[in-house]
Image (tube, one colour):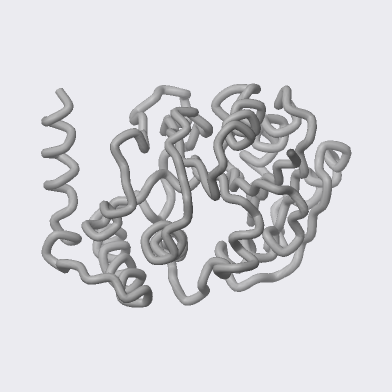
Length: 248
């Protein structure tokens, strides 16, 4: 089972090599690694060329943003399973892809969802983001599984479409809503911690981004004909807190 890993990047010279080495260090050998660069100006391209022996295919050209770049990577993919690894993240261990391959071979599913950890620059873990208690109905109140922990059958993109452009930070939410809730793909919680994710980014940077993602969640649900409560989505931090307290 070939697994395609896609990394999209732009001016990522400070972090990308760790990501590349994380893929190269996997014990699983049937891996296709694709990098889509958005025409970086900071030395990222030279870094990619330095590590070209660890990369199956790469391109560098202007794009329309993160999700356009992801779609380019998907179009280049030939693996049976596709996963995303961001350019400032690494795999949690060197056995992640071996575990993912075994899980998909054992279970007849369209997608698996797992866990990630979030950490600071100094390596301190600040959050374990688990999909253990997630189900697609939670999308209606603003909760999705951690995007980097999801591994999809590549053929889903052919049948159900790619990431929709026009979103700033919510195209992953729309795609997950379309796949899991509208089209009802088959899926299973893997229990695998897939990714060590560096804290930061637009989707986790304050009240402005909270309002933006709340609006884009509602747009994503509307696009897929899903009935929802705007109030519940805007107050999703309350449901998250209650869920955390109930688990204690």
